[in-house]
Length: 413
Ligand SMILES: *Cc1c(COP(=O)(O)O)cnc(C)c1O
Image 1 (cartoon, rainbow, N blue to C red):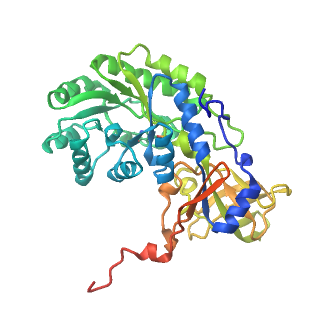
Image 2 (image 1 turned 180 degrees about the vertical axis):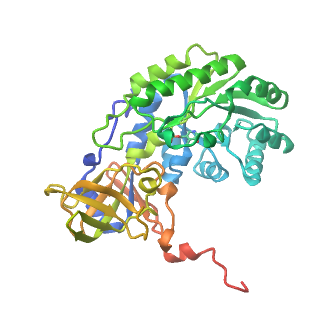
Image 3 (image 1 turned 180 degrees about the horizontal axis):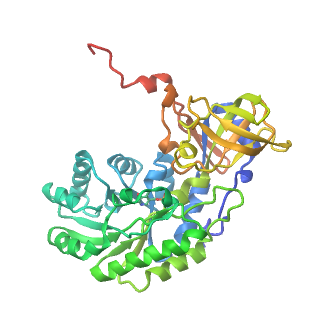
């Protein structure tokens, strides 16, 4: 039994060692991303163990940091990339290009050019496309290698209710057209797979609907026939709220397998969020405490530029005062230095009474955290340290203002 398959299915913010977090904040400054590579490994292994015969690839876009990619490659994972830069970073981290899967969504010409060049010397690379036009553009470049067809299952799960139907049509071809597209694709390429990414942030309440979408996709795969794999994408969620239960991957694996049914093709999955979300948090320092009659506003040095998910998706992230976790809780709003009312991490949240200089931890920041960080308000992006057992390593230095200005040109330059 490989280590990690019996690891806890969730890591809560309270499971992190506060003393170690405070000393990291003191040493490296704030805001600071803290990434636990051992947890990344555990999450991947637990997921992989739940799908014994399947091919599990890590969806790089959730966190494309080199430390994550090389940790997962060392653990035996393959990598799914959705952009040229992700392909290049996967290769730089040591991935065999023959093992990469490239999911092309409205791919810019330079992305397709790169993928086709990479595949020329690495015929194992697979390109997934979700529009006839993309296949035509691949053919125009002389590509005739491995491809998969992305289909649109017509059911969205997870936090998809926020996504308009018109946007859903962006991904994949309608399943009714799958057989037809497959015939034309087989003439020109080596058609090896069918692909669908059916949801995002799926927890147990969404699982029935998620499996219904998988059933549809598997039915389409049986209709198309003669495939090496059926790839059902990622979408497995983690509990962001303290009282939400985690997915039990053993039973989830069995349910997904049952939804796929008999299929003469290997199952493939592409978890992103599940692998990294609870393996990283953000440390941020309190700079302002304002107690007004209606609430207490706690100002911190992290902002929507550090973590945009609360502003972008109304996402809940747990917050803990790691400097003084045992104080009486006080109901607070926590916000950053950006001049927009969207820059709040929480409102009416009980947090152990924060005072100026306290270090707060914002949990579950590993997925779509640093990856979506920006330099809004001329803020250099934070540093990132990786811990692994007792080891600690700076894996991304803190940006300086000159990094923010680096590409600016003066007249005459
Ligand atoms: C984003 C994405 C994933 C990963 O999704 P998660 O919700 O992070 O698991 C997998 N496959 C494709 C094609 C994606 O676009």
